[in-house]
Image (tube, rainbow, N blue to C red):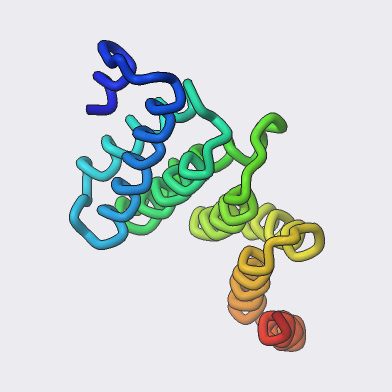
Length: 168
């Protein structure tokens, strides 16, 4: 369906964008509830995010689909290095802005921890805590940093971070 949408469709550009955005939303939800998993989930999300990237880069469902793809890649496929590469494209591209960007940065920090790069993970997550206006992303970043602090024996810092989460 996705490929034909751009090859032989008589839909207008706006209609194509809406259909592709909805396909991304449905695919993400299918992964979340377990209707798609394994290679089916990866191939579906990669196809849709590639099409969104090529045609409608700023669409919010693009960020959501990329985020879900990275989570799936890290958590279900146990390939955090691949997830870091997927997310790095988003967060390092200055032309990309969207309401999902802060959540993508949080996920990047989480995946960096999974590959053992706690220094860069800490820097990425601290940046969100200090500069993001997205309270959900800030809370998640503080919580992940608190878990990292606990794992590294930094009890007071972990307590301060958890207090910050409670204040949000």
